[in-house]
Image 1 (spheres, rainbow, N blue to C red):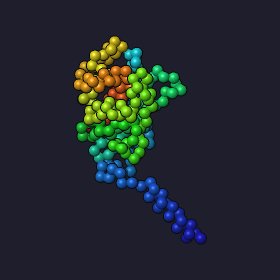
Image 2: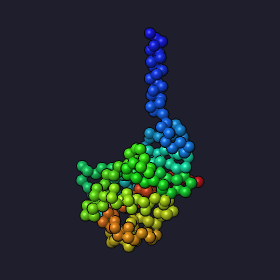
Image 3: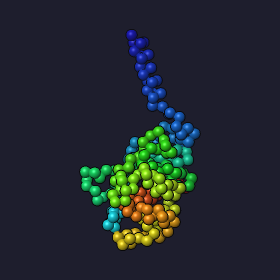
Image 4: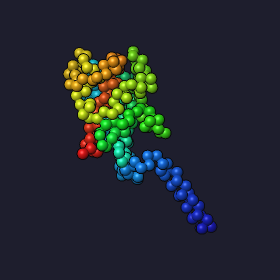
Length: 217
């Protein structure tokens, strides 16, 4: 009887090991097969949130997930995009990033599935969808053209960009860019979505600074 019980336990252990094992994803690019010892801990950052009235305040931006691969680092970060909504709907957005360890540039940024159509839901768009007045949606607009504008950029590229305007409106004059954004048509298209675009830019810059400090020479 004891032998049968012991054999059953061995089978259960083997089954659990297989179920929790590597599914083959990212083979050859995993820098730490067993995960970081603190991969379940939250790192608390803050980013300078800018509302539609020109008020800037530091807001919490926790890193929910951070995993170092051979060539890049995976991140999930959470933030509240808008501070003017009623508290009952002021949900947190979750952005998924992949940032290069060699160039420090954003390789992936999404509020939905990981990577390029990956198997896992790694992000969540919790801003208005569509954005009031402008009608901009995550799937139809931000995912298609605004977020791709950030792909390939690093800290140096975004240095001097504080808002998504070249000519700062009156409420944003104190935060005017010192670097020109080439995509003027894209700026015009998102002129009514300034809080959302500002937040994504500022969250990206904050995470890039953290990445540079921890993973770049």
